[in-house]
Image (cartoon, rainbow, N blue to C red):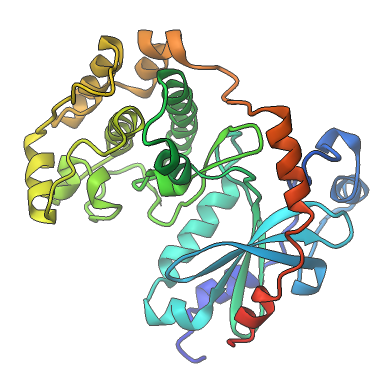
Length: 350
């Protein structure tokens, strides 16, 4: 279409060279086994300009993993190597309708540049006349939001492990001058070992200076964003406090019946701790040191990692392992994920 953003069109038409293999079918060949895509990359190492152009024909498409306002995500298997990825399908018509060309371009540029164990990889992309396809790391455990809805709240050990993982990932982002601005349970995924992955960089920005755009999700917004004041990396530190509270109590701390009341509670930092579930004084101390209106006085990411509650409760490996029988059952379920016709119906607009 004539209104298609030429910059985004150039970006998606770039040939993308994968710098490592996709996530494997689990349990199955690991990256160190030298299978499939890894072998291909080894072969390309000697080439001056190694490039790989992808198309839909390179993938077997399986069942849907989820859908959003702008598209859907499917489990997919790279045909040659049999490696499992997630394929996000976005229609260009939707991008134009909601005028998110700039946001999508920024998300793609930022996420492809990040390499951290707690950040979901965007391996590459390709497009056709109507759609953009993002090739993403497959997170076997699904959304952290789903886990929270099932369990209502997390143990202190689980919560501390996730907060530590998030803090480490955000420290890496901030070193790269990336502010995430929309950390919430729906944007956090879990891999097959329960390791947390930041998945959505749609509201992220790469900047050394303060920003003034209000974005993100209401319950997780810092006071400076609610008040439309300039903000910086400290908005992510605030969100860690919100998440720590939600992990331990099952709801965000400033939730209210109306958006207006939520705004008021955030601006006042109207923080209360319920009597149940029982939570340690150290956890409450960390939360109160993060949910501070003056952004310059919030606990730094380094101090979060050194906080007594984190040191005492967090698993430094980041993994919260499930039973072997549970993992075995999920492996069996994977074999049924490539029998769906829904993708083809969706892709054809039916």
